[in-house]
Length: 196
Image (cartoon, rainbow, N blue to C red; front, side):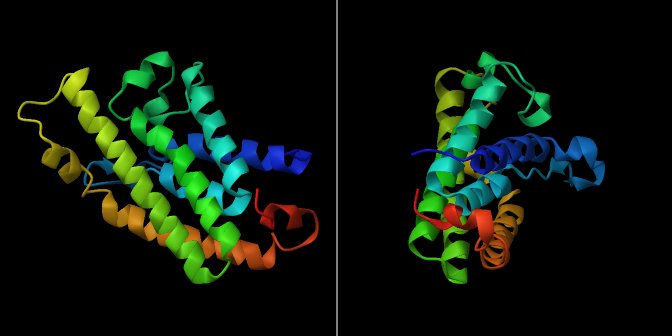
């Protein structure tokens, strides 16, 4: 499949948005609530899928991961480098690729508001399941696990950001659907609506 200049520009834009979303609290300190930073990576990964489509969305998330792995500080806390690959949280970065792909696939088949919201929530589930399981196995097999660390504890850690991520996922679905109706259905953006 050939991509147009607009496709590549939009994909690059989402790579930049992911970098900003990973470190939003560095630019907007008040987005730390109860000591927990509110990141927007999952939100932008979902948007990449439902706006760019499954293939281009997944490609943009792959580029984001590769850019960080080669040393550009685009990950959370301005992290970067190959050492990130063995980080307990690297599974979340990998999950963004699948999140974007699956969310994009769902809306390629059904473009109703409910489909956009469901696609976003399914993308969130993928992000949590893949990322949390990677984190658990990383702590069990190669990273220094906290004392008394269990599978249940790994999931309990995810309870704190869950309400925020559910709200943002629903918002992403609504926003993606609105863009679909107002912007992406016109002119040069029409080709993004086709199944990739």
